[in-house]
Image (tube, rainbow, N blue to C red; front, side, top):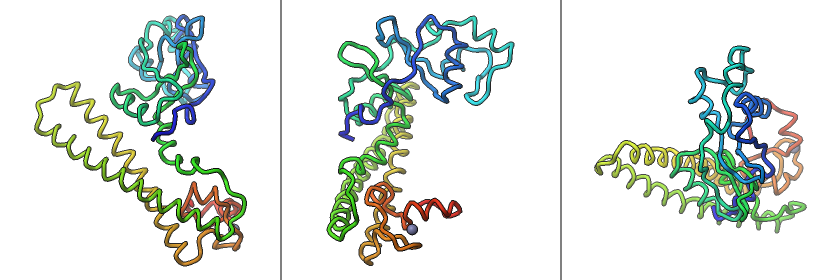
Length: 270
Ligand SMILES: [Zn+2]
């Protein structure tokens, strides 16, 4: 979680201006299947963020991201300007902020997306909840560069790496579980107002989502270490060819090379 957000944000995201119509904004989201649009001024500075939820709150109907608007709905959306319904004063972070900071900020403010801005306040990228979860799931794979073959010493290095990762994930998980427990106690015993209670519940849900990813990763690592103990790690159970190290890092539990995995879509991943 010490990874900088710039490694995981979408750089050069689509954006819109405050004087654009809500119809234009919606069509942009629909085209690209995105839930958030940063709103920029003439100098590319971030002045707001428009989310599909803002649209749903403002419009007298609930637009879906999979379906174009009906003619009457288009007329209504054309009458609104982005600036009238966007979230003003958006939460922003610099590109070198860590993922941990980003996750904390999102949980605190109960938002699904952060605008990443450079030192002059201009848009550098967009970081969504999905980006954060993806980062948690793949960060270990990115820390080490891809290795060419799968010679025994390369496999041994991978096993060391996975063993260390298992320790890190376990420690983090134990910490999370302790934090969840105290949060749970708070929710039960400390008199909180509605907003505080809501924020705590959101934080709890997000921690639980991260825990689930961590548990899945742990299970995959355990399977890989079992296979290593049996001398089977790194070779495809179907064709016997070497499974590339980067694939093993990303999917430690995989038993198939890419070609065999592709040729058998009926097999459950990995
Ligand atoms: Zn194979």
